[in-house]
Image (cartoon, rainbow, N blue to C red; front, side, top):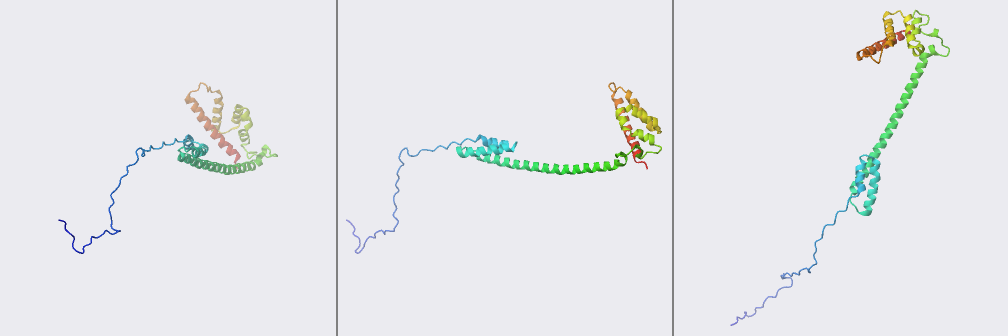
Length: 233
């Protein structure tokens, strides 16, 4: 027996805005549509880019030239190595700028140094000409020397006779020995005369060292005697 609803009961109709669950529907993808994609192969590195980076550390112009060539080829072929090419080009330009600055600095430095050296040499020559003018001018004579007319006239004249010392050194020592009155200086002159008889080829190291010491002593004494002649009061 079927139960009847009460009198006046009306079943509620679902409102339009009430949530109505919709069963999910699944549609399988067509067979063969999904295919896994393999990664694209990496493009090769441009050879000139590598040369540019390495060469820039040795020669700036190599980095610059090969860097520009590499950038041009990479833009056209799509190769990798753009960073290497840029680095080589930048390093090349930096090194080139440093080299140019160094050259400019060297030119300026040597120009200033040469100018100062030239002025110093010119000033020294002028001083020497002024110093020698009273004694070695065009109208000068031997009597104008500081020792002229003094008791050391003959000694200083022989001591200053460089022409004879260059032409005949042995005769120079003999002439100087004949006019010196200083026993110690005379002994040094005699030792210089004895050195002409030395056998340098068969000389021992000790004998050669002794000869050098003797020559050094002679040169110092000769210079002192010559100073006394030129600066005598």
